[in-house]
Length: 118
Image (cartoon, rainbow, N blue to C red; front, side):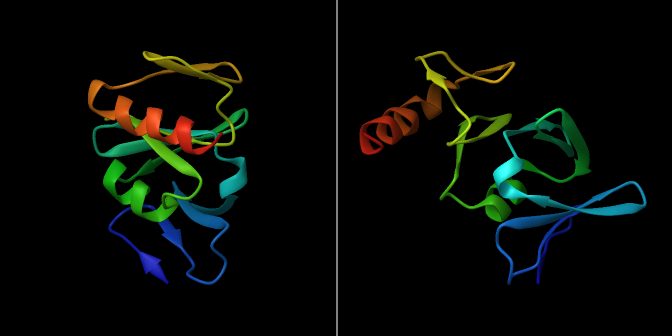
């Protein structure tokens, strides 16, 4: 089991779920339901549709747990699900009811992703 110093765990066997510790509860969340992750200092907000979970973790830890296959870091404060994003521009990414900014140092990664996904 991969467990970091955060409130998020990956069970190591079932890679499509994360075990999120929020308050006194532990909740299993499917990676497919995660639309994006937003950083707030020592915490992250994990958005799953209309539900959001505030968890003590860092973006570096979340990036390691989520992996690179289905997720893309687009800003120092945002990781998005590649499958949920609908519109990409040079400055922002739109999906569902969210608009996420694109950081200057992440633009090349997004352009590479767009070229490789065609």
